[in-house]
Length: 111
Image (tube, rainbow, N blue to C red):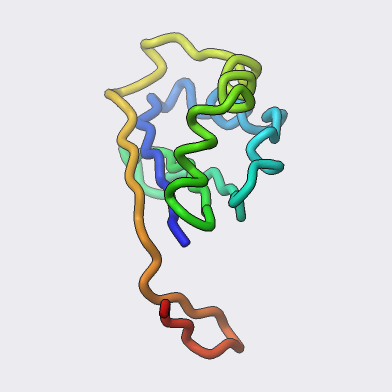
């Protein structure tokens, strides 16, 4: 499994508008092969970026999503904020899960 985090620095005056972009998101990603989950994380610390987090079966599934027509449609529908809404460029990070645990479950280790 991979976790993709897109860290997006949004100026405080535009935070509500940024969150609103995701409330009525196209949800096209939800039907993509390999997609597991989506989260929009609001920073709890002033000056920290929002994080758009998605979980995928594998990196190739995420890459297929970014090259798909659904990706283009979803980003076109979500509305655009003006350039001045952002405090820098987004930072995309991809992580491979090496360990995972949930309450009440045994620690999972990849094979």
